[in-house]
Length: 560
Image (cartoon, rainbow, N blue to C red):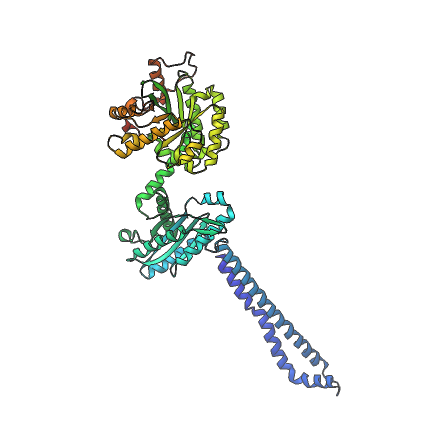
């Protein structure tokens, strides 16, 4: 509205009728008095005499001056209006354009998509919205610097723009997220599929930034403006179309990245559930809804209990008991995994303090905590405050973490071992770590991933891998723990390898603190010192429960 009013005023100024009227009136007056005054004026300037009507001569001279002044003023006004128009055009372009990539920005994209949908609808076509997000782009900035990251964004925008068909729109919505809007015939959705696939391929090509070769991938979500037209005879508006494409893009990221998906209605329900989970996790941490469960670790040769591994459970008041495979990845993505983990470790140290001194406590840490230079110091503080011996604590690091930053892992392991804490390599055999890493990193123990142990009877490959890992452990002098022991047959096969520890459902399912304490009391494995902490009865929510009561598949290894 204000833009239209400004244009109207500028147009009026450019055709200033007052100035034009003064010029016109001056010219008419000049013509009117010119016949009488000009001959006398000429005689005056030629020295032939003096005119008889000095008033007419003065009027003529003033008239000429007025014409010159009015015309000059009118030209200046025109130049001023043109300059203002040019300046406003530049300002409008800057307001609608992303300065880094020269694409449209978020502000300009929404109305442009609306106009594109209206135009396509009039011609019987549809508009496809493609949301594109660069996968793990933050790592590019963190490792190579923001200047390199900006160059990667510029190159990605250039490649996408080069593939964009005539009439298409491209915008950078912010960060590493782009949006494309493309008109297409309603029966040729395959053209949109090809375009999305070409975007993925183009972005995946290495970006040469100086002496660096940066490789990134992209996740895409696609939605079409006429997707509901068959049932409701309506066309999706620009904002709604972008929202649906964004949901589809998130779905692509969740299923592995470097791919694209068309929007489907159930995706929105998944996203809503995800949002509820995020809010529930944040509130649950503060409310103490996350509780430690404990899984027994047994000496396979003697059958004696040697310790417990702490496993996280979420006792949600609305969703019930949730397994770690559900909430751990979400907690990592929203940045609350450290707080969640440290609260659980603190509680576990308090619980384990009253166990027999020969029993150990194993806890897993997140890959994000590996990059925290202060984690070891905070863990030491927790040990001191809980009065728990560092020699009884084992920290488990997942093998896949070794690929992220070996230097950070080495520094953390050294710091933990300096405090007397043992460090185990968890899920060994699944992360493709090199033998040189295993040799140079001072681990105290290797844990064989449950997937190999559980399949020993049915898969010769799994049995061969278990045999190789146990031989490797013996050669390096590292104790071995086998996870996932569920049958007597597997137990007997593992006993042939000599001195091993093991854990799994054969020895019982993970139990809350109260049930674990009762078990130890019956085995006379509680410390002689009196127990000085009250047991929370509400934590005994799954004592003796079947696995069906735990929602979601249990990810015992790699869980917090």
